[in-house]
Length: 191
Ligand SMILES: [Zn+2]
Image (cartoon, rainbow, N blue to C red; front, side, top):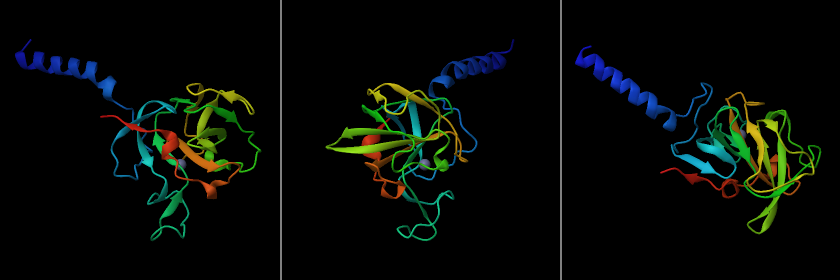
């Protein structure tokens, strides 16, 4: 065996050992409409992932033009975090699962299993809506504790690949009333 071949095998072996720890499998449908390249951890999901579309006005093609936004930009009512299908989602805060038919009922754009958790935090009660979940492990009316696994991420209702849509609304509010969600998501950048 030549030294070059031996060297190439050694490099391949090192890459095979190192790559899985830092790699994030990429969904070819993902497109990132943000200049933020950080990966974030959160009590709401496993692993560390990038923001795909932030809250508010953005250049993605998925939202109708909104008068609050410049040019032809649309308005996103939550934060999208790109993560592989099957990534576990947790309750980042304790709360109660709302009935799907409770006021503010989410439409089909959120997927087949959108669910809402009413939580009290930062001095107020809000409804937290998780969109695009595939498997939901909690039932309407159930009390969930912070840290409890509640669902798995998926691409249900999402043409732009597997991700978590995280939205915060005032109690019983519709999507038009959504507020800046970042505080409740408790993102911590990976350094
Ligand atoms: Zn979204």
